Length: 477
Ligand code: ADP
Ligand code: MG
Ligand code: ZN
Image 1 (cartoon, rainbow, N blue to C red):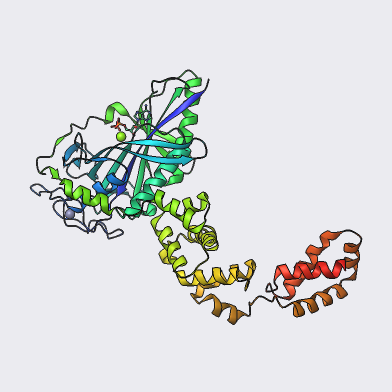
Image 2 (image 1 turned 135 degrees about the horizontal axis):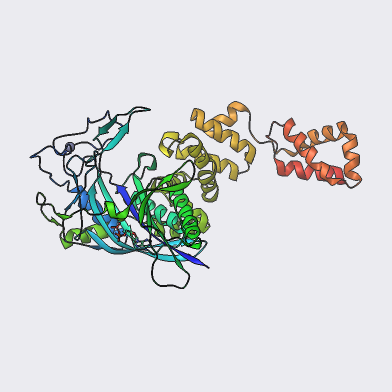
């Protein structure tokens, strides 16, 4: 029996505001526990919320970028539940009048090609605090610095059909949110978190199966892992004759499996009602139009432009435009005269690898666009080969010196001079007669040995193209 996965995502995006959603407290990350707090976000009796006007503005901008209708008078509602990280015993969220509805986003994957994922709604809400569990002990502590940090929740239609599509969708949301600047999109700080709803149905059947919801997935990889695991698990359960229970699950990131947290029935009676402390959020049609006009170039359009203007493949353009930070860095490199295809290769290759290995952001790595541009020019003009380029690149990251200085200091200039290389080739052949004989008897593979020796002789600075040609001439001649 064949099954089709049906997937819908709820993505939480942390907004890039300086202060919280209903009070003036700072949203700065990493402060000592409970220092970014006041009576409002501590939930003290009598404290009243006042909406940070940046929040609906950013929500509307993201909604427009995701092809949503923007509600002119949306409403906050109380979602009631008890948990120690929620001092008011309700979360201020939105219910039946969210700020954005009926949008869509197009994604592109290898398995299904282009598909349009519906966006049911986007609503504004406050984040909860954080519980800190004492190591090996019995006590838990509450840090409310995060309580009241503004979030948008983006709810998709159940239009996603694979873990690959879910990942592509989440990456695209990340790219758009960071491009417009509504979020810093720092995954390490939990700026993008996702709940994945997964069900299976027999292929060809219209009716959806029972779903599970795996909560709090804070990386693209975890989303993929959780969904792949759930698809497998549910298929096994169904084939064993068991029924799927609607429940909330969590991902064990070490074992790459999901496990049950609670069943749905116990959880979802939130007794939503309009928050009497907050007025309707009004956005004028003029303001919405202004936001629409001022939207920056979105990743999709940027990708097309990169392909046309810089001759990049769709893969390269897609990777570069996946984050605002990376695409703007790339364009800075080009503005300094960088060679488009080479600059692209260095950024999505070596530079990204260094970022992943060191856990540093592009900003923290501090490679000036000018230096990278110069490196690509030197390669393009044949002044250094690929091996030397790697040495120069590594040295630039350490010292921040220009490639020219590094090449000068370390004597790394490429030797293309035919006379000089020719003399070295002749010396080498004279000193290795047995290998020369082998070559002339048809074992032409030994040329690799000679190339290697030449590179050693020149400490990697010999021009490989010239060396190869000279070797062939002398050996064949
Ligand atoms: P809840 O309020 O319980 O979270 P919603 O109806 O708002 O439920 O749906 C939440 C998410 O679950 C949405 O992204 C939706 O697309 C998805 N979803 C709903 N039904 C299914 C299903 N049968 N299989 C997979 N996903 C589903
Ligand atoms: Mg839900
Ligand atoms: Zn506060």
